[in-house]
Image (cartoon, rainbow, N blue to C red; front, side):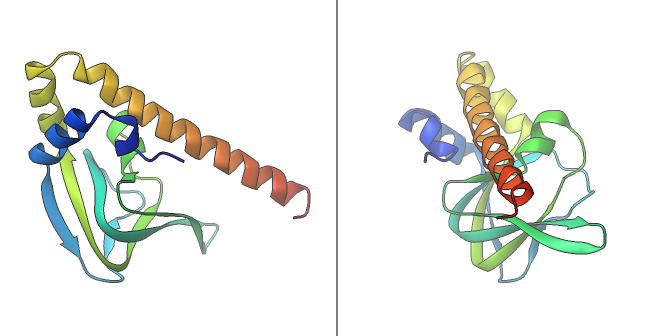
Length: 142
């Protein structure tokens, strides 16, 4: 399956990474904390992360994300608080893209806006379908 960067052209990927800032996280570090405000988009450039939701007093891993996957996408899109914790599983490098960075790219290339949000929509759609499948399997007792 394609990840976020796979839904963009090679030129769009280059521009997005050029505008971003690399941040390093050690194993076990919290990259995003559930319930906190976030206005940035994070693209994993090295390593993997665990997405963990705290539900009814328990931590439950929702998924693992890898190189070129995106995180913080929900809060980036809807400006709400983050819906899960994102924890580094090993050493991780993420490229952080700020809203201002996207606005700068769009000023230079107005068509980027549509391509960028189409890629985010594809990722969110893929994740929703996967979660629906998990819920269905759970309800069937599997």
